[in-house]
Image 1 (cartoon, rainbow, N blue to C red):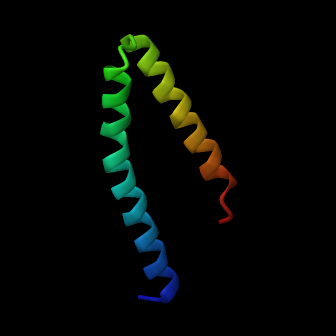
Image 2 (cartoon, rainbow, N blue to C red):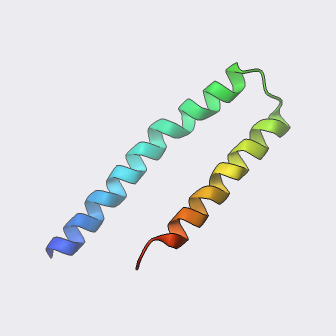
Image 3 (tube, rainbow, N blue to C red):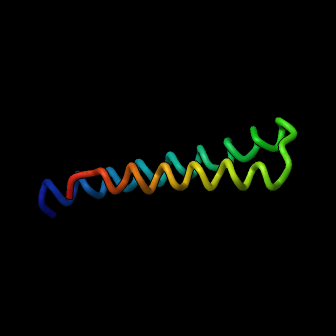
Length: 60
């Protein structure tokens, strides 16, 4: 495995770990805040859209 592949693998693991922790945490906070399911869906959709846009900005 080259150094670039190793760095790419570590980056993917870090992102997966962060999403695995942040996803349920954000969902729990939105539910605890008393938001309706529709509002939670809109918030999560906006976060997903931001993630897509940020990902597209990354250099290849």
